[in-house]
Image (tube, rainbow, N blue to C red; front, side, top):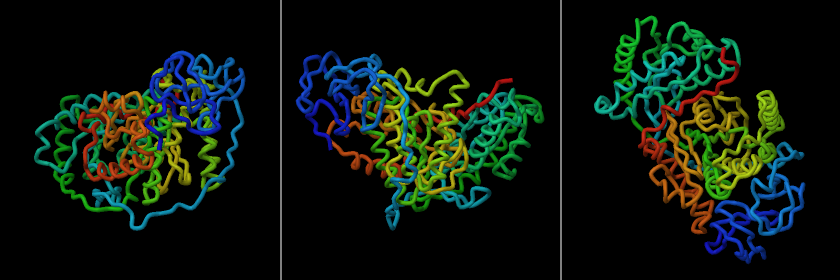
Length: 511
């Protein structure tokens, strides 16, 4: 555990920098480092502990986070004016650190909803929604109109239904009907249509769009039934008639959707998507490692955790390939990294376009530094499989899904893959929710918790404050995950987040 009196945080004996725990002013002696601060260093930012020559690698976490763009003196603030990206070889060492998982028997339990009917039979839900999906942007307004009808007291007669939610998007037409973008959209919609947290789903189209309902259902092997219904605006005769027709169908779904009970189920039925957004210099020290500790517990209890955001593991992927259960699994991850290098090159971008301005203000300088902190969310257990965006996750344990770093797009893919909960760390105060799966928010620092407690479910800043250990916060988080899976509302659910954050990954030309 860190001591409360230290002005800085040293993460590894071999590091060239330490992290300011509070704002440091010039002339401050860092006694533990025998270094005097030169100039102002904001909290969460880096201070050099030795002289570093231009071109030399700079280490944090005992890993390279960039290269000195000029000579750096001991005590100087190390950030955008002195640290830059650079190429270096990574040793993928496939499977070198894989080890047997120490499972816990009997496993922990939560109060889940076991689906009995349809394609979700036997699957366990953490929430009980009725969902309305649009095939295309053209049907978004009517989809929202149907869902809006059920706001407020109209659901009082159905206390076991968590809500009626509209999930709309901005594509579905003006795109190649057989292209990668359409495949991703259909895979995403199919994953949501099958999601255990939906008791019933209504799919609404326009009628003439590229993403035809029949093609969507054929590609995703979906079959209509009492709790999976479809229709199109052009068939029903316009906006008002479509909304009325949709309201009638949802009314038919609500009575059977309400007939559910929660019962104890093992934690193996919990699949958690791991997210970080609005990261800062503390993310890789507090909230992300604490989430990693909770993930280790989840895996040991038989559950599943999905790490994603490929641009935000870039430069740290070798830490994951070393934990792969086989060379084939490790090479699947490397293949996705290579795809992203090619993708950004084609789009005339670069992987270091991430971190964002907010990340940089919080102390993160390069994508290498951000990535090394981000992978900590994945804990220490074996990497058992790698999935493409929105693919159904079938493996148990720690897995990876290829997604963009943009959180709404990334989490949408995870939920489509089966995540029935999201845990989201933030150092800047990201506002986020993810219907139909509850989303827990973790603060990386106590200042954020104090300022934005109404949005944050757990303060991991206690780790940096020296008042709690990573393992202690990880244990508290694991229990919070079980409580939330059992029905306790997250703060983002209380604010009504979740519908607008449905953002499928769009690939390809807009035609």
